[in-house]
Amino acid sequence: PEIPKAQCEALEAATLPPVVKDALARAYHARVATAVVREPQNTWSNLAFVFAGALVFARDRRVFPRLLGAALIALGSAGGALAMTAAVFRNDVRLAGIKPFDSTYTTIGGVAAVFVLLAAGLLIATRQRVPPRRLAARLGLLAVVVAGAAFCQLHDRPGLCLCAPDGLVQGHAIWHVLMAGAAALAHDLFCRIESALASTRAPAAG
Image (cartoon, rainbow, N blue to C red):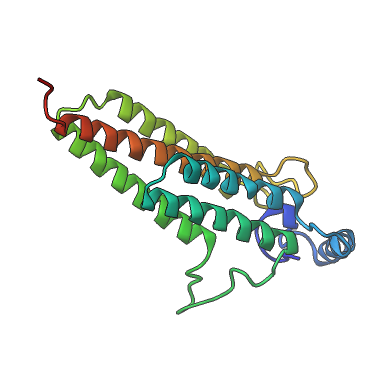
């Protein structure tokens, strides 16, 4: 369904000779033509976003965290539905030759925004004389998780180390799970920063 798109579970064979590419394309289409779930790993790994969103929604009763939880649930549900049907044109909207809704651009923008906000929170916490070590360690863990997710997403393409169209484990699926975990880690870190700031502003007892 995604020829000539990039993710390996959807078999992108642009680098192969035309005869081989056509044979593989026919075999792939035949395999998924009658399948209810065309990209199983891609589909089910989106449920990680639903799980993370439900966790945030249930844990935090404030308005904005609940909006975050609802957004993650919607993201996982929509992503799973698109992967299930392998919608061919879902990223093909172009403006001035650029695909603004491509997952690469939207993900980079979202991750950058989260890290800017977290860095600002850590800076404020430091100025409020909150010990930043634990917060910085959690931010480092978040950075490692996001870096691992990005590696999986970028290397799940033909000729790269994680490309295995028929493999049980898909790099793109790992990317989903790690990014859902990163969203939960970011929420936890925001909560800890807020709690630390609140403790410094609380009036002294007695």
